[in-house]
Image 1 (cartoon, helix red, strand yellow):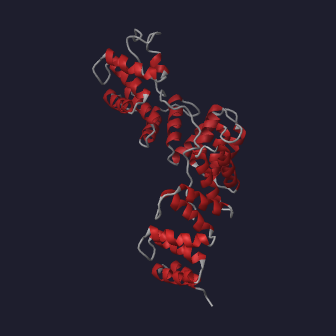
Image 2: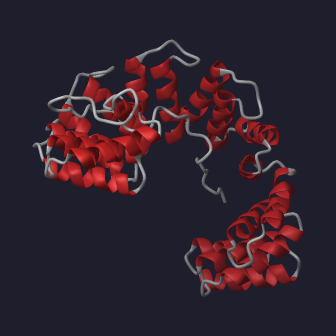
Image 3: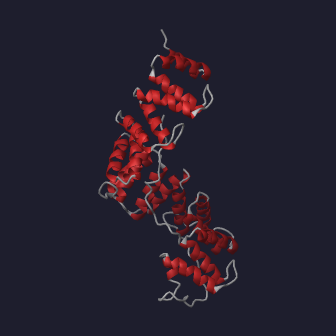
Length: 360
């Protein structure tokens, strides 16, 4: 005799979600944990019933109490994000641990993220390793970052490259960017600008703002690719639109110098002022130079000195180079050019911020 669970699945596959819910409720009343989980999904997604996160949490909770792995993971997420329940990081970890102990890869990854946030790097690396060895691309990237930065494990660039490559081969955008950095700086591999550009290109195509910024640098410099200021400008603009401040600075220099775009000093000033208002020394530097040259704004050496001094006090070397040794005056020059690639960011391995997707 066909079970209520199977009848519900058949109804669901035929598109009759309401009937599926009815069958699963009958199966759940008989203690079937899979039906309880399916009801959680139904209430979470609004399939056959009105969307109700609290009801979804209740059904996931019942299934999780019976040991359903996916339900345990879902409860981990619900308590982590406060979906249908009051956010509770400890309860979230408890549920992720229950799923992880049953071999759930995503839960090992989430436990790694939790321990990383707690600064328990050794435990984080252990959890990432569990998930990475099971093929989780996000965990492979994070484990690579641990080896690169020495977080919980000894620094080992070759192992970092090994794990970045594993993740990159699965299409992980951050890992592809990280491999680009390794090839650019020769960390764990022979320095190879062409290979670096290739990895930046792949990551950029997936919308990674850091990769767009670095690929833009390469095109502006002709590093590993033919010099192409127009392409560099487009990449800086795309990266800046995603909130990348160093790309925004380089976009300003493009407008200031007419690199890859029609020269527009006023637009350059607007960009530099935006960065300066955010407390970015690169913006203070760009704006200070603009005031010094009278480019896009009236010439004002006092204002230029104020801005360049502020940038210098924050360790911005290009600004310091324009001041006298005692830092009390500007060096006497007729005009100051704004070089490209003077942004705040040098290549940084991306591990900490990367998150994976929940796998149902």
